[in-house]
Each structure stands twice: as structure tokens, then as C-alpha cells.
Length: 342
Image (cartoon, rainbow, N blue to C red; front, side, top):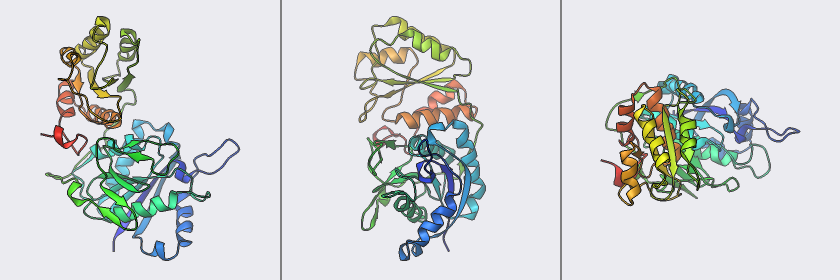
């Protein structure tokens, strides 16, 4: 009999009302079973499941160190279940989905993240529908990757971004197509599913929350911001959120020198676009060659969330700067579009 492990870590789905608004609360597993008992025949069609609850957090409080605990819990239970569902807050779900995808390389079972825009038990909540869909997909042996199931779609975990704070379809992948569409039936696009060419390469390294800094470009930004962020000896990578096709203020020599100095000190400087759709194209403008001279690594159409998570996983795993730069451009689990994959 197929059996799924639900790992509950927090988020809106399990929150309860308080005088100050919704707050995390324990006991989601029992509340979920109670809700499913009321769903009748619909619940009877779901796979059997166990619930493992970790101390619930608002996902705005997420830190990279949480990823290790969740990866360890999944890996410890891996051989005992056919699939896994992670109940998580929506605000930082895309970061966690990417991080887990990078830590569960070679996985042979589904790991499906979901949550809710409205807490379980509140009128018009989307929680129960999302959990039922996630359980159904977690029982599908063809899915051998980390994915986000939310609203009407299943998305690759290392390609997804949160797109709405209000809509039930809260997630999308701006440069990708869904893995499944959830309507009257579940339309699983098997030709798009990831296929591993090697065995398990599981990891759960010790993260340093301050190892990666991020800098979103805006008009007037200068070298002071770069130097301030990279002055901390614990910062080993800087992720630029650049304009358009990867552009930065190429006439600001001090800004470029600050990037080059950081790179020369062993700080990995990487570049993603702020744009919702498209990619960093180092050959499109002269800026690309300027950044290459400064040692900046272009990350094509990788999402900021996936880039951030991959930097953290690489650094936590002990990779030196040269290895990090090389591995960023290698496609591990579909974090790059097919046109950028070797």
C-alpha cells in the first residue's frame, strides 16, 4: 500500500487566529485528519499518510539552517515511504523548494511542497484542496523531483516563484511550463519530468545564514553598497539582481572595481536578472564583458531563489570559490532552461 509522509513545518496553512492576526500553531496533523474525515469519499481515495510535525514557523522567519533539519528528516524517512509532502509557508516556499532540490539530487521519489493562502478551517480556505492534490502527486512514482503543488498546477521546485499574495494560484515559473495541470483530472506532463542519470547524492550540510548576500540594483547604487555587504568575512558570495539582460552601471568604475575586489578576495559574485521573464545574456551588451572582467558569473534564466539556494548549498558543502563558480553553470536538477543546459 502506498504510504506518504507529511512533514509539517509551518506557514499559513496551520496558523490560527489571535488578537494580533494569524500565528503559527502546533497540532496541524490532527486538524488535517479531522478535516479529511469530513471530506468523505474524496478523502478515501487518498493514499495513507503519516504526519511528522516540526516546530511551526511563519515562513518569513525562515533561515537556511532550517533547510538542513528538513532535509535530514526527509532523508531519515526516505526508505520507509513512497513519497513526501512538505507543508510550508508561501512567502519563502520557492527558496526551500530549490534548496531541497539541490540537497536531494538523485532522488527516486516525489517531494511535493504545498501550503495555503488561507488557513485550514477558515472559510474559503484553499488548504484542504492543496493538501489533497499534493498527496495524490506524492503517490505518483513518475515524479522523482522536488516540486511545488499549489492551486491548479505542479511546478518544478527549482524554477518556481511566488507571484501573488492574494490569488489561490500563488506560484508560477516565469521561464518554464508546469509539470502538471490540476483540473477535473490531473494532467501530468511526463515528458517534462526530471530523470536522474546517477544514484542518490543526498546532502544536509551545515549552513551559515550569512554566507550569501544579495544586492538589488537601483539607479544611484554605488560601490559603497558592494563593499558594505562584502566586508563581513562570513559573506562568501554576493548575488546581484541586475537590470534587464544582466546589466549594471558600466560607467561607474568604482562600482565595478568593488565587484572585482570582492571576486579577487574569493567572494563568488553571481548575476541574475530582476526581470520576471528572460535571462542574463552576457553577450547582449558591453556590460557583459565588463562584468566578466570583474569575475562575475552570469546565471542565465536561473531564478533568484534558486541561485541563492544553490550558492548556499555549494558553500555549506565545503566547495571553494573556483568550484562554486564552475558548478553554478552546471545544471543539477533543471534549475536552468533547456537552452542553457549542456
